[in-house]
Image (cartoon, rainbow, N blue to C red):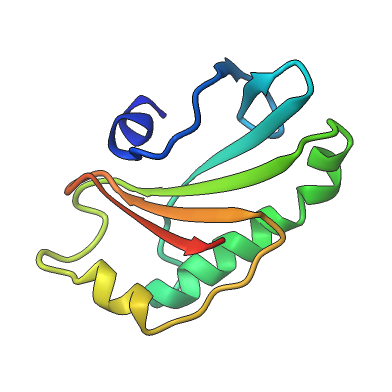
Length: 121
């Protein structure tokens, strides 16, 4: 999470607390909270199909998150180095596809390059 925060220049200021379902709560003020779910990218099939699969899988947890009365929920899908072929063009693949989710924001974070791609929101 620290790497994501350092590289996402528009990350809101607030008190970040480790949680369970979602993984983190960002308390912006006493009345406003953002839930942040982290998940590791794993290739089930093609790259785009795998991103869609992860989003759909995590969307199923939204009713649980809503019980925590969050103002917003974010999903961060992180890709570790060596999980994709060398010179794989993530940005080109993501730009050609439109994603939908119950999360207000979905990010794909390439940890090898430090690049963050917002694919929803």
